[in-house]
Image (tube, rainbow, N blue to C red):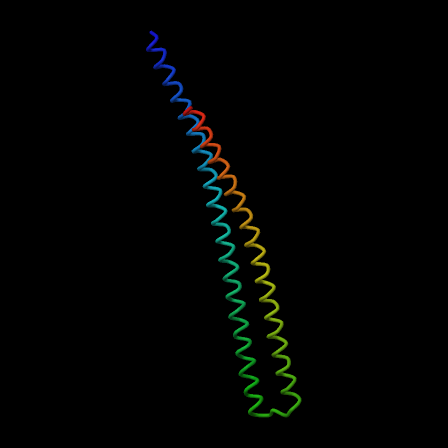
Length: 143
């Protein structure tokens, strides 16, 4: 009877350890899912920002190429006329405005990425804390 009682106590202790481990693993899985979801959201935002920046860069490059072509044409045809000088000046202003817009979008993208990184870091800290708690729990159970 004493042996059965000891075996029963051992089984209950093993069951408690397994229950704690299961609870910890569920918590860890939830954190891992949250981390993965956050990383996917950050990656999607970064990809969207990159696409916008690429389109803006292509547009700016196209505008700059058109301005350069126009400037070369103007220089070879009628470099001294006031009308063509105004057109070249207008193209430069447009290219400068496009550059400022591209820089603004790049700053906004950097801010979004920094914000997303802060969220991921917070999740990683939570994950580390839970792992530390699990290790402490396992250490307590083994002693």
